Length: 87
Image (cartoon, rainbow, N blue to C red):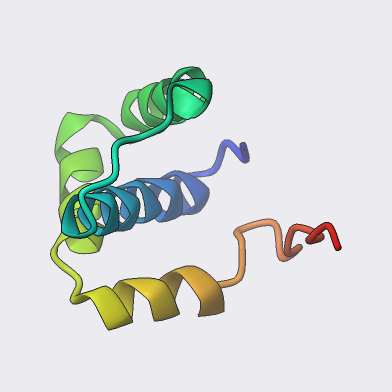
């Protein structure tokens, strides 16, 4: 995870989007992903501070489903590289 504030705010917003989408389809975070999820949240919260993290998280959590999906797909990662998808 990048350590600049922009990347942390981006991560917090994506975490909010993901939580909202999981709740809307009634799917829990899989245990296999829990440790990485918690580490990402903890790192972003520590670097941003609780208030800024909460604002960014709420921004993502409050997005309508279509907007959250578009934000997730269209927003380039802070490092400018998109992950490679496996075939």
